[in-house]
Length: 81
Image 1 (tube, rainbow, N blue to C red):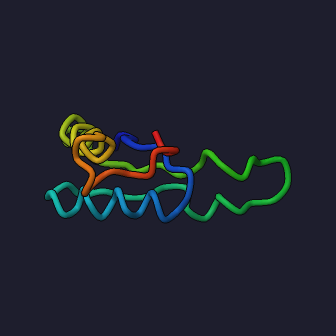
Image 2 (cartoon, rainbow, N blue to C red; image 1 turned 60 degrees about the vertical axis):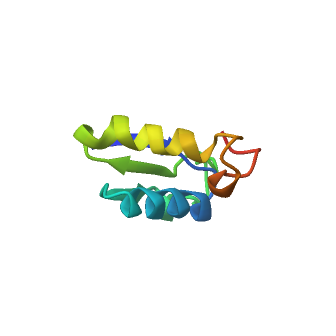
């Protein structure tokens, strides 16, 4: 498994996961339950979308299209890389 997307929140991670699944790529969100952990752990930076190694290049291309300003229908909010 390869991480292909670092999400800032659970909603963003699951939107990317759903899109990848819609494109025929099995995807998982990791770190969902760590986001609100207390103590010395930072509250952000744990959420990642993971895919099989063989699907990583295609998944990254799909995610890049989601961030492409020319494709407004699929664009993530501008504050998310």
